[in-house]
Amino acid sequence: MTSQADILQQLKTLNEVEIATAISSMKSNPTELSSFLQRQQDKIYNKVKRQKEDTINKVYGDLSLSTDVQKNYVLHNKRNHDLYAVQENVIKNQENSANTIIEDKNLAGRKNEMNEWSVGNKKDTLFVYSSLFITLSLLTLDTAIWRLGMISGYLMTAIAAATILIFILIVLNRGYYTDVSRNKHHWNKRIYEGKYGKIPIPLCATDIANAVTGASNAVQAGVTSGITNAENRMANVLSDASTRLRRSNTQ
Image (cartoon, rainbow, N blue to C red; front, side, top):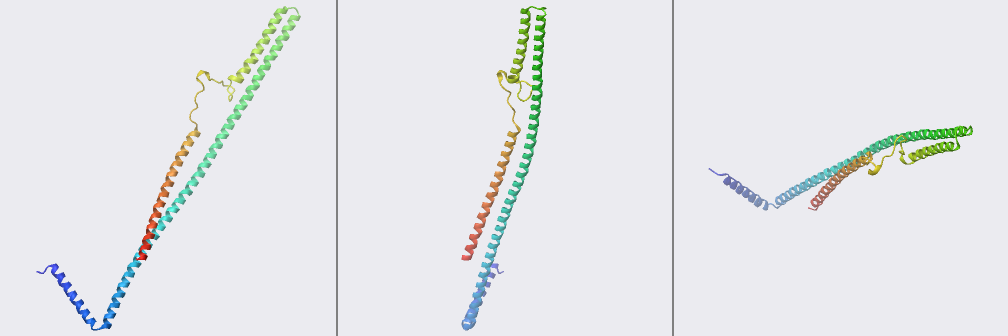
C-alpha cells in the first residue's frame, strides 16, 4: 500500500516534469516564453500591490480607530470638566444661600441682643434715677425734720451721710457690674471666667465645611490625573500606528 509521503513525492516529481516540459516547449517559442514571463510578472506585481494596499488599509483603519478613541477621550474629559463646573456653580449657590441665611440669623440675633441691651440699660438708668429721687427725698425729709427741731443736727448729718453713701454704693455697684461682670452680648447673663479660664469652643461648622471641600478637591484631582494618563497612553498608541504606516510605505 502506497504511503502518503510516496504519493506527495510522486506528485512533486510529476509537477517538476510538467514544468520542465513546459519550459522546454516555451524555449522553442520565444514569443510564448516572453508572454508567460510577462504574465507571471504581472501576477507577482498585482499580488504584492494587493498586499501593500491591504497593509495600508489595515494601518489606516487602526489609525482612524485610535483617532476616534482619542476624540472620545477628549470629549469625555471636556464633559467631565463641564459637569465639574456645573457642580461647582451649584455648590457655590448653595454656599451663598447658606451664608446669607447665617448672616441674616446673626444679624437678627445681634439686633435682638442690641434691643435687649437698650431696654436693660434704660431700666438700669431708671433704677439709678429712682434711687437718686429717693435719696433726694430722704435728704429733703431729713432736713425738714431737723428744721422742725424733731432731731438733732448730729442725727440729721448721720442720716444724710448714710443715705448719700447708700446711693454712691448703688451707682458704683451697677457701673462695675455693667462694665466688668455683665456679658457683652446678653444683658441678663454674667461672665464666669474664674481661675480655670473660659470654656473651650467646640468645632465650628465652617471648619467641617472646609474639611469636606478639601476632600472633594483631592478626589477631583485624582480623577483629572487618571484622565491625563489615559490621554498620554492614547497619544503613544497613535504615534506607534503612524510609525507602522511610514514603515509599510517605505517597504
